Image (cartoon, rainbow, N blue to C red; front, top):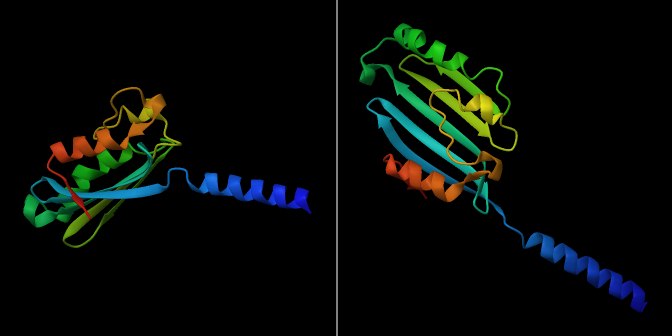
Length: 149
């Protein structure tokens, strides 16, 4: 009975310690990097390490002074550069009055060498150590984004 109790207490101790590790959290930032574009950036992170980042941009045709067809002509070449890069998921949809662009980056699976060549993806420092949430927050806030709580 004592042996069973000891094993049970060890199991509970290990389970308790495992549950005390860094939990996965999310931070969201909103901003307008350019007139006519509303952007929402969502980071999922553990400790200081960013796991995923999702950017959702809503592009207003009227505010940019373009038509839906002109938006397609401008955005299609941009969307092509995201193809076939491991760790990137890109979707672009055209609605009547706006285009919606959604890019999700899975930093755990990302092909950093290919991603660095894509316009709009900024990766500084040693990516082998992961992407810092603290530095990411400093960067987006310096670009005018505010945290949405």
